[in-house]
Amino acid sequence: MVEFLATFGAAAKELFDYNREMYEFDQAPLCLQRHFSYKEPQSHVSHARHPEELVAEEWEEWEESEESEESDGEFEEPELPTFAERKWSAPPQTWPNEAAALFVPLGPHTAATRFVGEAPVASWFPATLYNVLCELPVNEFDLQAWLYPKGSHLFTARQLQRLLEATGVTCLGRVLDVGAGDGCHTAVLRAVSQSVVAAETSRGMAWHLEREGYEVWCEDVSETFAERAADLARRKLPLFSLVSVLNVLDRCAAPRKLCSAAAALLEPGGFLLLASPLPFSASYYGPETGWNGQPLAGLEDLGFGKEGEDAWARDGLTMIQDFLPSCGFQVEAVSRLPYLSGGDVLDGGCIELDDILVLARKT
Ligand SMILES: C[S@@+](CC[C@H](N)C(=O)[O-])C[C@H]1O[C@@H](n2cnc3c(N)ncnc32)[C@H](O)[C@@H]1O
Image (cartoon, rainbow, N blue to C red):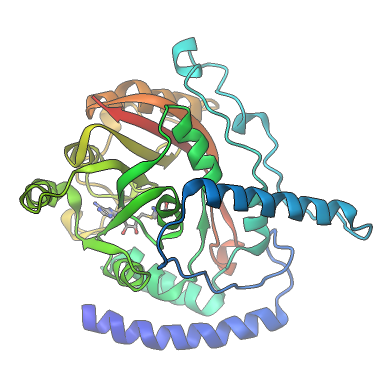
């Protein structure tokens, strides 16, 4: 299966590149794009810079872009989301005081708006191929790794640092990014920490991450955490100061087991950084459950995922008051951000999900 995917992936990439050129040539904006310009992602193999240096640079870049836009008389406001709704900057009104007090507003979302304008969108051929192949018992993330351009956005280094600072953390040591995917957020984590290890069950994603210079554990850490912890101890390496599980909980075989594994790999007082689209809706396709779309054990017992107007607020509260404490964590900061990915032309391009972002300390 791996050889097949590798050969198939190479051929598909060739076709994809050709297709991308054709797309750029004749594409009228289908989604919210200002224009479609696929940018080769920057390599992140260089050593991490000091977070303050990076954050200052990022801020200057943002200010410059704002100034040049303001000073340009020709500039027309593009029809892009500005993410100005109240929901991004304040806790849900139905949350009790103790939960609302944990909310850290992380806007403005200039970077998110910019991402929507420039998101790399898969064109019709790879998108069609993906949809066809998804009918087979194949890892969907492997297909994405080979067929879709890299690109997603959740937070900038500055936003992440603000969340960390809200709990008194100024610099991170070793970080484990569980379910790193295409590595877009792994790169941000690397910018604010000493080192990052990526864990991935998709061999396709793992292959790309290795090429970007990450140490990659290609496995399900909810199965291997005990051996990994023992191995780190044998090599006299510390456990992790932060484990991130970003947009994985709803797409893995066993979400509760994964969070407990994260706790086991953290040093005492270490942090879990969790992001998840809400309302919570699990969707897992894998051999463990006969590719039926369901995880081995979901979180239905917690009452997640019930429809309704305030479903986000209810699931968010369940996440921070019930689920995470039951996995050995105490929530110290919460936020809400749009989770954006390029998507494909068949689905109208850029996809926006409504993420809760939680920083929780191991108890
Ligand atoms: C929706 S993607 C999220 C990727 C990235 N973290 C992000 O936020 O964009 C979910 C990723 O988690 C990976 N994954 C699912 N279950 C996993 C597990 N038990 N251990 C490690 N990775 C897992 C999948 O292969 C996929 O790449």
